[in-house]
Length: 394
Image (cartoon, rainbow, N blue to C red):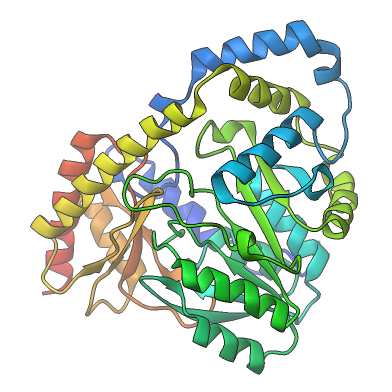
């Protein structure tokens, strides 16, 4: 009998994978995935960038590279986070990762021993929960409201859990809720991290996709004591298939993570790194991001209009100012997975809220994705979803 390590889920099941597989039926209108809109991928421009890379850096791009990443891309990241997030750092503070998921994994591997506490928003990004769980984390969920993680609840959790190793937050257009943390709370979060000597992992994959409201500075911009690890990705503004993420942190943390990365994959794909650096040099990236944001804003509005028109009275939902997701709460539903099955019969799908909770699950919650749904599908799908919910709450 093969005995797997304790990091492998005991039941061997992939509940979310099963949901997404069911939602992939061509007859189903799916709001379940978390995919960017592929029609906005800059294929032509990226092809030109890759051709130029082969002409100018072909041998270097095809050779082994530095674990921290291609220097040109790391320099680009420094300029990018300074301009967009008021985060100022040096080259040694930047690590390129194979997607932002690797950054989460490296941080989990570096900081979490079995039994260590990780404080997370309630609910939070389900794949981060899976990663931290694989290293034996004990989770404590911190209450949220429409302005993000509540700082009084966070400080209470820090006092009650002196073995806390990490605070994980998605402050901009959070996955799964779409909420954005208020600026005052971001400043307080940085202060609490220093006060209790605990690291914050600030995960910001969606921050540039803003279609309403005003930009809010990163938690890292308030960090005076190197307690915030800031991570992001090119997946949402360029292409997820390139698997390019990054982390900006104190040099001693980056050095430790680099050693762990070397044992995982040696380094991130060189060609993709050179190509993205070249793409930024040759193109108006801000205009490209605005095109993405405008489209997602239009699709979000169609989705919230559908909620208002078709959903039962009493249903609550978030109204994000950016990103890719919104969150729905349906009072009176005790089993969200059963609700999902009923909605499949109406040929529409979502991701049930259950796997996003580190602690007690709030029934009747689910996540909807609007970024990867054509406008006509949103209109039809929201009516079908509303019909299913009307039946479920009778």
